[in-house]
Image 1 (cartoon, rainbow, N blue to C red):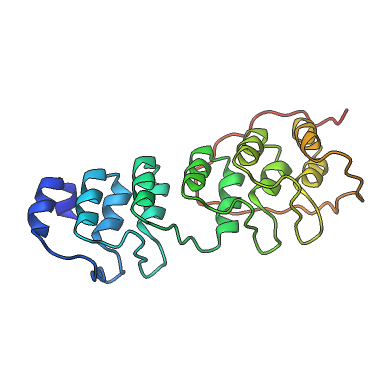
Image 2: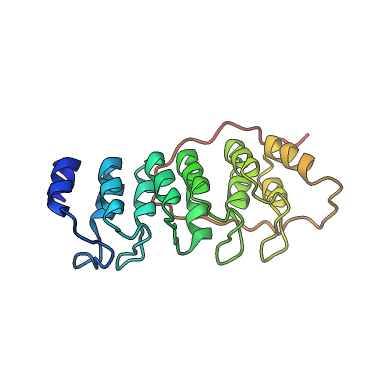
Length: 214
């Protein structure tokens, strides 16, 4: 860690031709690439991969360097790792995406899209990030997900779509937006389920929205 923080030149001297392809990491299974990605040090990432470090190495918690780069908001490193064959290997993609949508974290969602996450991945109830964003009236997140090719008519375990979720909360702008994408939908009223997600990511305010359906 000290060598990474000390700069890529010191790191280059330390590696000095070593092959890092079999590096198993420290007691947590973390390798220098985890630290370089988390700190946003692109030069160090390049040096480590040139020494054959595994771009998709998982630590003992299953975290890869790409996850570290995403959570550190380092889009240049995310793109670099992808070019070098790195994989996200994110477990529980659906819950992770739902938490990001619940928090209104556009930056995190954009980085997850860059990392080619499956936006239609659901949680234990098959509710997706689009369901959550619609249920909470977050039109900006709904638009982002749809524009990134999330499926507007995807159904959860109760056969409800994001449009049904928006109707429960009577979020007019979200309803109107989704109705344009899912026309002629005649379905029973949504069951009214309310789901709260505990989020570990930074919250940003939702855009104001009318609660009166015209």
